[in-house]
Figure 1 (cartoon, rainbow, N blue to C red):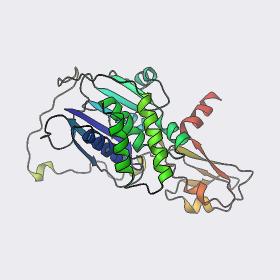
Figure 2 (cartoon, helix red, strand yellow):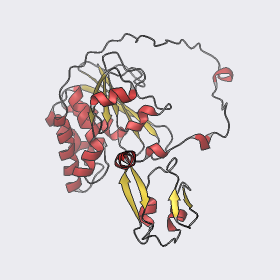
Figure 3 (tube, helix red, strand yellow):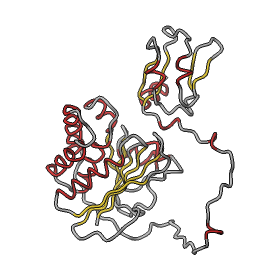
Figure 4 (tube, rainbow, N blue to C red):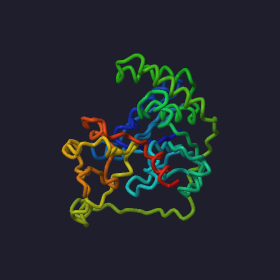
Length: 303
């Protein structure tokens, strides 16, 4: 049995990706399961979804705690201690990361010892679909890694996306981008072991009654310490030559991240701005542009 686990953020389509993969596997003659695990019901929050694929009956139920393949749809999750997307990955497993970095650069950056596949599916989505829609592209990469045939993937994309997307042209662009990603990934043989890795601690947790084992908040009032700036795909950037100081962006920001500098011009707290870009949409004079986060960071680092 092949066990795959998708890690993304709310709005990126991890649930749909796992569903497309499950349908593709079924159409290719496998038995399949797919299901999501929701955390906080909000855009940008970490989301996990799972797919099991097997030629035999699948009697296993519940979360996939020891995956053969991990699909990381948002690179920032690799540094998020609340997500830990690589936890439980079997020895010999495969990690796909949505990043402009090479596999070697990704392994060095995040200390990954397993086989790493990388592809900047965000850029591909922007170039071919015109939007940062990652679900069909991530599903296509996972299908290639899992050995699912292209025809089954195409049929699964048509079946699942037609229930979500009403515009035929947009559906076709999704399929075209997904097949591009499918063909961009080199086939790989997955040979995992059930053995625990060295230095991995196996902890046995005894059963306790609810009075003992109920969760408790040990550090109260710590929400302000949770930084959400790494959720962004795009960051808002102000053109102060065009800005009229009308304060519309300040009033419309749902997170209260936009403040005024000494000259009365707005600026945002990038440590907490999630990149919803409502400010850019609402600006009456178009003084706020959106800059892809990785590109803007590179430009700053180069300066």
